[in-house]
Length: 104
Image: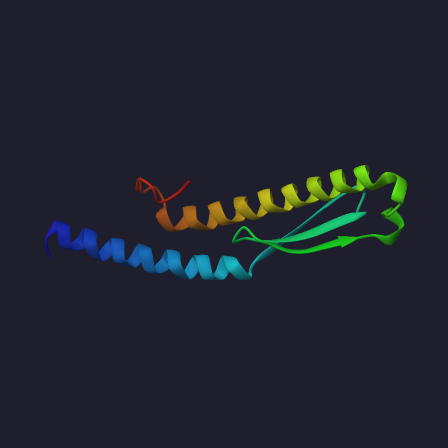
């Protein structure tokens, strides 16, 4: 088999593996919290947010601004964790390949 043929076969395998990994990551989740657990979020490793839970004791009309900041902090933490998991998993598939445009 020619070098180009081997490369094409390898690229097809990597593409298939990446599609399978992306599908698996869509089901994988991470949890993050802020405010000592008052705000909890679950983020999916495909970059979406699955849920937000707010401890009822954390809600006080006079502290809405604080609550908004806690939610923002928890969401960003969860999404960052999910992105790290996704990058780690996708990095395993490319294992040293430098393919322009494939990974961010």
